Structure formats: C-alpha cells, structure tokens
Length: 595
Image (cartoon, rainbow, N blue to C red):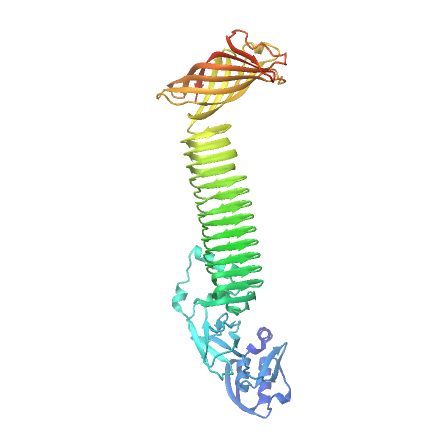
C-alpha cells in the first residue's frame, strides 16, 4: 500500500486515474469520493458550486481532469497546488481575440495517452506539445468559426481536427500509428549526423521538428528571441522571405533576407542574405552572402560569400569566397577563395585559392593556390602553387612549391623553391640550399685539384640542378701544427649527353682556413666545366677544367702560402678600392664519384 501511494504521489493531481460511478449523487459528495480515491483535497468556496445538484456517471480509468470536465462542463475552473485542487468560478470561454482549447491525444489502437505530440493552428501558428500524460492546452488568436487544428507525431499519420465554435470541454483526439514509417527508420551515418545537428544543435523544439514534416511559408517574421515572435512555437517549421530578429531568431529557412542583432538559427536552407552580430547557424545550403561578427556554422554547403570575425564552419562544401578572422573549416570540398587570419582546414579537395596567416590543410587535392605564413598541407594532388614557411604534399605537385624553410612532395612536376626540398621524384627543378630527391641525382665525390689534393663533396638534387657541399685539406698540412683546410658550397647542372656520359658545370665557393683562424676573408671560387663518365652503375669518373678566383683582404698579412707544390700562371691580379684582392688562374680537377 505504501508503494502504491508513493507511485500515485508522483503523478500530477489532475492526471491521476479514477474508477468511480455516480448514481444521483450530490455534487459535494461526488467531489469528496474523487478526492479520497485520488489522495488529494478539493478547495473551493461553497458559492462556486451548487452542492445539492445531483450527478450521474460511470468513469473507468479516467483522469481527474476528465471527470471534472464532464461534471462541470466549463462552469468551473480548476488548478493543482501542492496536495490541493482549487476550484474557481469559470471565466468566459471566449474573448474578443483569443480562445483556449485543451484536451488529450491518444493512440487510436491502444487508447494510451501520447506525449510529445504537436498540436497547432496552421493559420495563426499557435501551437502546443502534449506533456507526459498526453495533455495539451493551446491559445488561438482570432480563431475562425471553422477552426482546424493539425495534430502530428513522428511515426503516426497526420491528423486534422475540426473544432466547433461553441466547444468548451476537453478534446480527445485519437491518432493512428503509421507502420510503414516505423519499419523504415534506419538511417545512414550521414543522416544520423544531420539528424543530431538538426535536433540537438539547430533545434530549440525537437518535438515539433520531428512531428511536423510539411513546410509552412510566411512572407515576414519578427522576433525578439526564438519563439518570442510572430511565428510563435512553430518558428522552426516556417520558411520566411524576410526574417528580422531583434536579438536572436529561429526558423526553418529564409528565402531573401535575414538580420539578427546577435544570432540567426535556420534548420534548413538560406537562399538570400544573412547578417548576424554574433553567429549564423544553418542546417541546409547557403546561397548569396553570409556575414557574422563571430561565426558562421553550416551543416550543408555554401554557394556564396562568407565573412566571419572568427570562424566559418561548413559541413559539406564551400564555393566562391570564405573569409574569417581566425579559421575556415570545410568538411567537404572548397571550390572558391578562402582567406583566414590563422588557418583554412578542408576535409575534401581545395579547388580555389587558400590564403591564411598560419596554415592551410586540405586532406585531398589542392589548387590552384595554398598560401600561408607557416604551413600548407594537401593530402592529394596539387595543381597550382603552395606558398608558405613549410609545405607538405604526400601526393603529386603539378606546379610550384615555394617555402621559406621546407618543401616535401612525393612527386613534383614543376618547381620546388625552398631552403630545404625533399621529394621522391622530380620532373622539373628543385631550387634551394639543399634538395634531396630519392629518385634524383646524388653523388659522393672524392677529387683533387691543383691546390687541394684531397677533397670530399656531396652532390644532391636532380641532373638539371643540384647542390654541392664540399670540404678539402691542403697537402702536407697534417704534418703541421695547424691544418690548412677548406669548406664550401656550390650549385651545378649535369645534362646527359649519352647514356653513360654527362656534361658538368659547377660553381662553388669555399673558405680557406688555417687551424681555426677565421679572422679574414680567404675565398676560393671555382667554375668547373667537365664531363662525367659512368662506366658502371653508381660509379663515375669526372674530369675537367676550372676557372679559379681567390679573394683576400689586402690589409691582412698572415695568410698562409696557398701554392706550395705547384704555382699556376696568375692571369689576373687586382686590388679594388674596398681593399679586396682578386687573383685568377686556370686549373683542373679530377674525381671519382659514387652512388
């Protein structure tokens, strides 16, 4: 009994179920019996009811509300407070402009009261949603004599109820389940994501969204906040031509213009211009222009221009132009211009210019331009240019990579320009301080010339253009207290003449150092013109002539003797006004190359 009373206490007083029969019962006695069975107390002024009136009726599983409605027929009003139901004299059921209707929505087959059912007037857009006990109450402004209420619930057939002009008691509306809808509820992953967006992110009233699938059109709506406006509780079901939101608004869609001081939320498509002081959130496609002080958040694609102070987020694709102070994020393809203060992130292909202060990321193809102050990444092919501090393209680049620091691409069909370039293969030219191409040109060279008989060099790049890192030691310097050595850098080209013969043209410059003395400039500059024979795979012999130029400081008197075993014929010796001296002579080089 204790458990039964506790369970009853959880049910609102007016929704408690009563089984009772009256046969010529005084109304005051009838109320006392109802209150005893329902475990509550009636409170009323004796003048409110005619205590001696006799009533008849049999009620089986009826709610307290339904019994009172039958007993009084609108002459008494009732409301629950704590453990009391308070009865007061009934007001006029109708006024000049408004009528109130209430009732229950039940399952036609089972008789069960249904919660979360949408009940609305298609003309005024006044609406209500049934509570956990199937009860609703709706106020309709200026109702016509032939008022029709639409009743809708997900997985149930749509129902329209005619309400007579003199109707004052409770409505009981049966609706039937739609078995076909129940059997086809399986959604794809994408549909589930969209459903989550619509019902959790873009929906402020998910019940009406789920229940009412037909579209309602209005020319203009004005709102203070969502649901406080001319579209009432059906705002999420209405498409407007013009939408004006004093602070913020919510609708199904807009066809021409929407302005919100703070925000605009649209479940479906926006085909016109949309402006918001803070943010715009749209579930469908956006055409024309979208502007927000902070963010534009869209579930579908954007086919116009976007401007946001912080972020543009597009779940599907973006076209034409997206500009954001912080970042542009596109889950699909981006086929227009994207400009962001920090970054552009595209989960699909990028087919328009991407320009960002920090980074551009496209998980698939990119082009024609990715330009960022820090980092560019494209997961697929690039058909254009990547420009940034660091560029990474795991796929093919048909165009140019320009980086202040580092370029990487699997295949290059064009040009790499950067401090450090790395690629698997290059059909073009990598230009930089160092370029390494796995299927390119890389040689280790041991050589001798007329000054340094022991030189080691590493050549890396492609035949058209490679970098040279070189070092050497002067003959006999190992026996001295301080070693006479050199280190330097250069560039070269090696066009193929035949399958086993290459032409070599190299330009190098090296600093000559005694011990660790770097006090003065002592540069040895060489232009080498020669050939490379490759009698066997990964082995080559190089020989050729050099034009040499030594640059020294004429005011420094502690240079070591450069020529000891062989003294070349100096063809040019001149000291310039800046005290630099240049000596030039002809020489030669022979070397053995590996790799």
